[in-house]
Length: 68
Image (cartoon, rainbow, N blue to C red; front, side, top):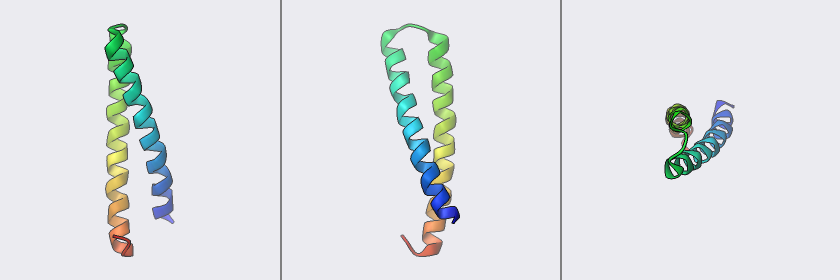
């Protein structure tokens, strides 16, 4: 059941990462609010770390289950 939870968590985190990447790109290109850009980039780094950790756990569980 943890495997299914991780699948759902990964989908959510990947969507959030894509959203934040878009925001960082837009903010960087606009040359506007640097503080907002830094905060968004920091949030992106946090979400990326969470996604990477969840993906590693998912891969481990998939290997144990024989899915890979």
